[in-house]
Image (tube, rainbow over all chains, first blue to last red; front, side, top):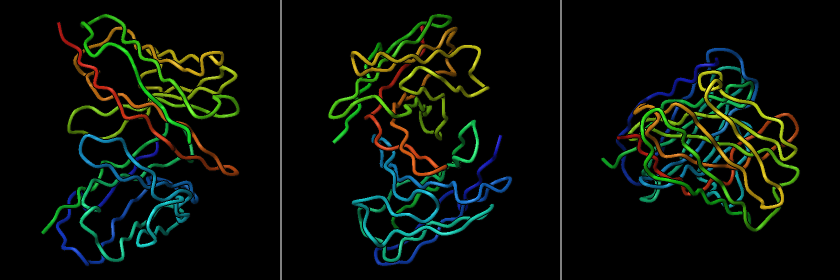
Length: 107
Length: 120
């Protein structure tokens, strides 16, 4: 199985901050990497697919980059509604695997 | 706009079979892969398996011996059965569509999720 490791596991930041979350795969997954946002009691919501493609309707302050084993999700200017847990997910091979999540909290 | 809705018992006894159905509305189940994903309380996401509308499946090896995913195109539904459940199977179960572009794919949209508790 491909292991996905996110860092940090949790992060405190303020509204307006620029935030970067990292996801590392245990082997190369090309650009087969997706990012999701999950708020308490809600289903995950797709933000970024194929490493850098912004899902329709997602604000442009979200961006993704990377290929191979190292990927980043960047929020350029945090808004109050962005405080949530973020997951990366690889679709390179089955079993599909997710990172353990990064909890983004208000400072 | 496609919407997914999970349904099924919220409480299952240990050693019994968990059964859930996902109803797809606002679009056809045809020409897509569909998936089940679960999340134990306070923990991360675990992929359970895929089914294509034609019926072909791909399961997570960690659950393969206990999982069956099926599809009913006439009802626009797909279903999950997980046998011999234990407390470790307590989780929110999500259904999701697998969207694709070229060789890559992702989960979107998702159902709202349903909590299944395994307890006697």
